Length: 189
Image 1: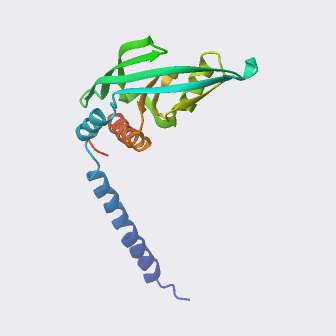
Image 2 (image 1 turned 60 degrees about the vertical axis):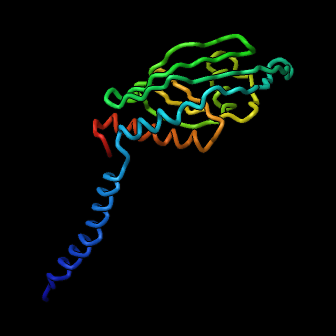
Image 3 (image 1 turned 180 degrees about the vertical axis):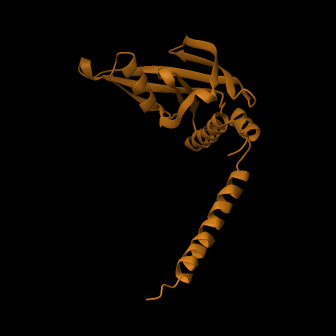
């Protein structure tokens, strides 16, 4: 019985012919990915929508469906995206029913970010209410607002609000890219 050694060689050559272009394509795609500096500039230019005003009708299921309305004003300003330190710094101001509830500077160290997600503000508010001891509250936000939530260990979150779902998702995509670049220590993938 004779074994044809050319068949394994042909299969190996075919496998190489299939894998090599895929590997080259992946390398080219990584070379075409935006740099960290470009990505951080994009975040700086697009993550600040300015002053957003919305209302939340809150229903308390523990009190026979009691309903009340809260008026919110939230503003992100002075955002600086620093590529060398992989940090975002910004000012956040929130008013609820005309009273200032938060007015401070914040830092988001991108190397510490575990996840970046976009959720409707209704859902984000439900999570906040649950964490603060009010899981029975349900909020309906109007007009619709989207929350980009960057989560870090220890339950720390940085939130950016958007009136446009598309903008929120684009900034989230850029932020995820920046997080990956910062974690890898590379300028591009």
